[in-house]
Length: 141
Picture 1 (cartoon, one colour):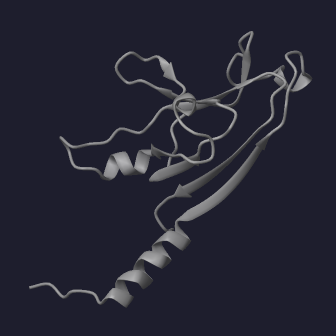
Picture 2 (tube, one colour):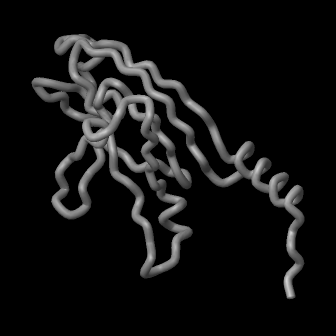
């Protein structure tokens, strides 16, 4: 039979794992006008209504926790329809946490029960600032 860890050993192991493989980010997106020079070389073409300060991507780590902002801008791709969904429009600002599955989590999940990485982006309306908080959980180096 395998040896069981004590509660303290388990807490110590988890604390080290979370501390070494994680980071917390506060992002302040500044308001940008439609013809702002910073939009001349965007990685994703702006629309008439919005620009993409965080272009379409998958997170590379395990999980990303995103605090719902009072300025809806997070977009997540629906895997079936390939349409963009704005989950912040269905929730109460600053009281909801979104969990984004990263590429490493998808690689570590069992076949048949595999979770796919979440394709997402930020589509921010022009002349609108946005603040958000993210917690990135990854594997310790």
